Amino acid sequence: MAKKKNISASNIISFYMDYVLEHNKQPKTVYAFAKENNFEESKFYEHFGNFEAIEKGIFKAFFDNTLNALEASEDYQNFEPRNKLLSFYFTFFENLTANRSYVIYALNQHKNKLKNYVILKDLKSHFTHYIHQLGIELIETKQEQIDKLQDRALQESAWMQLLLTLKFWMDDTSASFEKTDIFIEKSVNTSFDVLNIAPLKSLIDFGKFIYKEKVQMDIK
Image (cartoon, rainbow, N blue to C red; front, side, top):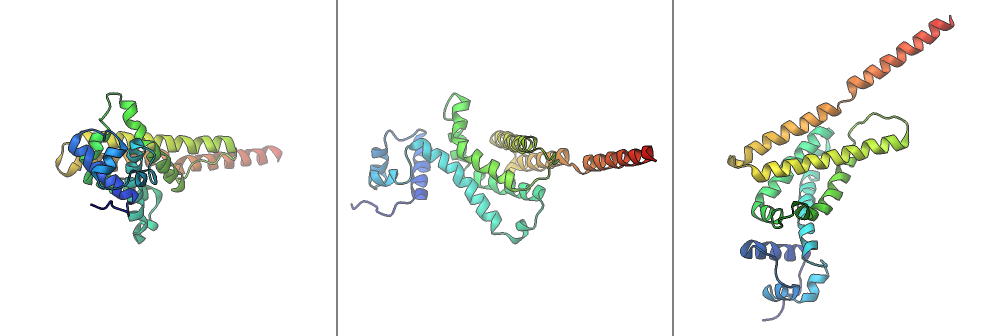
């Protein structure tokens, strides 16, 4: 039988996910994997360096599929950052749920939990960039280093929140994962409530006003 010629990254991802779910382990070699799926080994290396790269690519694909779906929505484009992030969460976890068996396998394949989460490296990079692009309002200090630290702290805390939600979803046994939906709504809303700087900005503005008026009164 002639080898398949048009092999895309998504084809390889599908072959890989099917293999690990059927065998509960990685293929022994790229050669054996390519042979089983009837394509040349060289086609594999056009897209991925090894199986670990596929695993990272799968979670990035979940992210890309989520963002592509959201950006195709006119409603999403007009959302405030809070609703954009909520929409991201709900859509992202719909993607995960559609591939739940693989996600559970991938994040539990090693006894060392930290090693399991290494495959989320690419996802973290793209997710934290997404958080940065949302334009969530922070207090401007006019000091570049402090503003950068604030932004970095926001990205890291958002990533930790995503990991916590992922762990909750993995342990969730409720019908249609309705408890995860509740967790998402409450956690995202709470995060934005904590980040709500409007009252603090009003207090700062009031303080500036009092200081200015006091100085003027002292001058008089």
